Image (tube, rainbow, N blue to C red; front, top):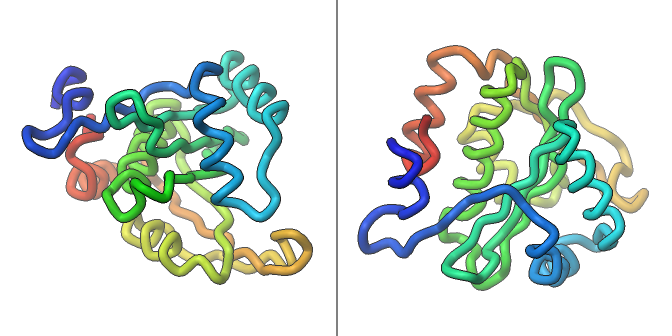
Length: 180
């Protein structure tokens, strides 16, 4: 699929454009962040993350529906692994494939960077997110006790060998709009 096709989306679906997160997105991002997390990151944290992105240490993406920010996602790099730090979708865009698209785009970015593993933590209570990550082939690798706010456990999820042809095929099937 061409870059132009990915930007335009499928006919009749309304275009969802995914682009690098920029400072201009942060005003619209903060309400999504605050609605999504009990202890949201501050604006200063996002400024720091964007600086690390500029240095090639992070990937952050914005999903735009028209001019409206539908969601965002981030990832850091540690050795050969890519670690998803956050995926958040505005309430009005949930259950419309935005998180799927963002996760697929992160996975492709990790592959393009040469990462071999993809990992993240997810709240034990967030079964919807767990199902999304399982569709993308991530498996539970353990529990981090009281990881969230010293109250809720996190499931650590991993996927190894993300650069292999079978995983790239999985990404293409799950989200053709992001396919490379």
